[in-house]
Length: 222
Image 1 (cartoon, rainbow, N blue to C red):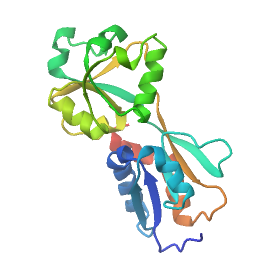
Image 2: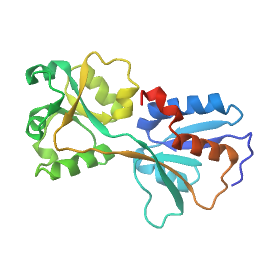
Image 3: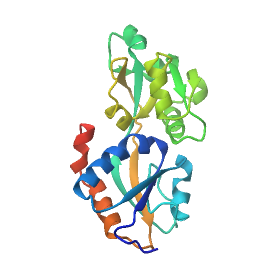
């Protein structure tokens, strides 16, 4: 598939990235390179790779690596770990600490995601290192997506794990605090992906290189 420089290329990603990080990245890209036209498509996170291979997008942004053997070029470009956001009303009994132990996490009313979610997978794996399971958690509610977690946290329903970029782009920080859980690493990277044997237009290359640079990080306070 050969791209005309004046025709848009499509960036496909998950709802989380498309609502937080991607708008900031695209805003700065378009300011620097207004001659290139870009469209975006949001897919369920587990389908982003297949949508790329099915040519529903030209560049994909995903938190998971491609399957070995896929004809995909993949490069790491952004560190976006999970952080725990806790309503201030729930943190009042912890002497205003910015950390919790794993045992304290077990007792905290938590907002959890669906089983197939990458966030759920990451938390499950981190808990297993401490001999815990998701069943050991005190569940306040099950929600779908970072936006739902943030809304419930702000309402005081419970605490939840979200991507750091969600917090960095949120303007309403009065009702919650970011806390870390001692001994739990929830590292998460975002990857750029494109089809290995397809045309790589000038606009796509310029976006790819811009995304890998740190120029646009200032908009996240990085």
